[in-house]
Amino acid sequence: MVTKEQDIDLIRRSRIAIAPWVADSIEKKMFGGVCMRYKSKMSIVETKGRLMVRVVSQKMDAILKEEYVFPMDFTDKPMKEFVFYAPERV
Image 1 (cartoon, rainbow, N blue to C red):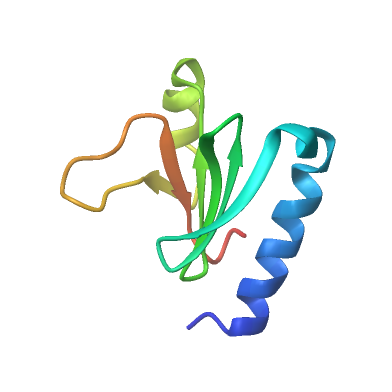
Image 2: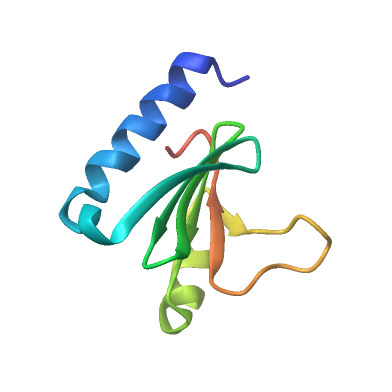
């Protein structure tokens, strides 16, 4: 079980990660968590202790081979260009 403190820490670390692009980024509540949007596109989302990340399609196969990474799947059909990192990884 992920604690609220862990969620807050994940959001804090996500903000640090996008700091170089903050001029083109906005933060919005979505999916029961916080979404970081870059140039109006979802890029990083914290939801229920998981980290959802946009991945360019050319790198998707390699990323999915990493431990603790799995396709973003809310409806039995994975979304293109998105993965989840399991709580153990983040």
